[in-house]
Length: 125
Image (cartoon, rainbow, N blue to C red; front, side, top):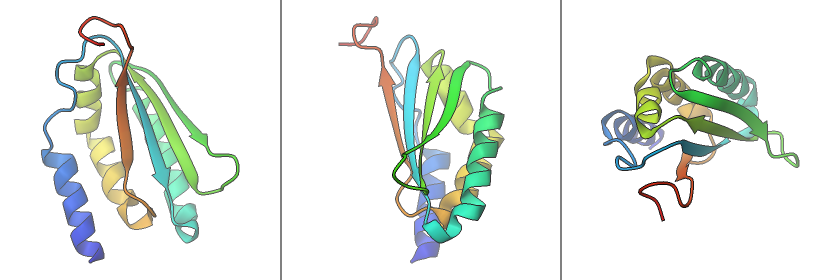
C-alpha cells in the first residue's frame, strides 16, 4: 500500500498540468508538511535543504520555512513567486522533484500545497 501511495504521489507531481495557468501577478504558496515524528531526523534536514535550494530559483521572491509552535513535526513553507510561470518552473526543477520523492516515506499526511493570488489583482476577483 505504501509503495502504491508513493507511486501515485510521484505520478501526480510529475505529470500534473500546471496549476492556475491564468493567474497574473505574484503567486503565493503555503505548503504544509507533516512528518511522522520518528522520521523527523530524516525529514527536517531534507526540508531545510529544499528551502535553501529553492531561494535561488528564478522568480522566487521569498521562500520561508516555519514551524507550528505547539508541535515538533509540522512545518509550513511560505513561498512567493513573481508569476505562475516562475512557480511552474520551480515545481519542475530537479531539486523539487528529488525533494518530493525523498520525503514521501517520512510524511504523515499528504503533501498539502495551496496556491493563492492577490485579491483584486488583474484577472482575479
